[in-house]
Image (cartoon, rainbow, N blue to C red):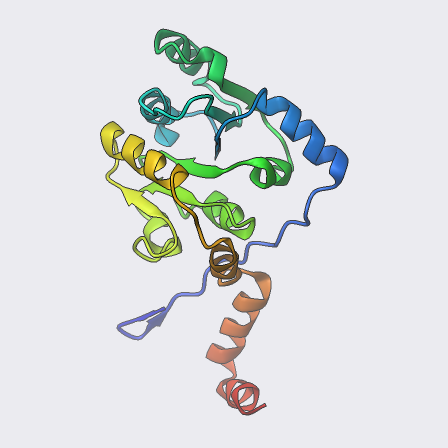
Length: 212
């Protein structure tokens, strides 16, 4: 992306290998039942606002839906209490920290991000790389760029529980072009970043590449 003479080159996000069968089976067992599976990944701290996600999840009408929160942090006790207060504790899985979240992306039906702020939002790219549909708050600063103003996912206003609930409901109710989502993730790959640097620093290399 260029703006007034500046060129933005995103930090590369290495592609995760598809998980082994035993890792997939372990992840599947942690979901605890059938029904639509909604995943979020991140530290349990105020800026991630998983409380908003819990409140939105409580409004879904999908029977048997599950929400998995992958991560750990200072807000865990509060979030567990909130899930109980909302009457959804039996459908919310606090899975803790996992160094490799790929088995959970691979076994989910929807990725949701409810942050008030994100430096970028690597987890959105990770979700897209598995062809996972995304619903995210349009928080500063990465989600809108990654999802290209909603072309590759649904953006909702920050802090709007009704909008987040509606967006998740709608995303679970329609088909998605998962191959297009995977292709979008490639825009943030190591190869794409390397090509962007070479295009910027060695214009003649770009000309040779385009001619080949």
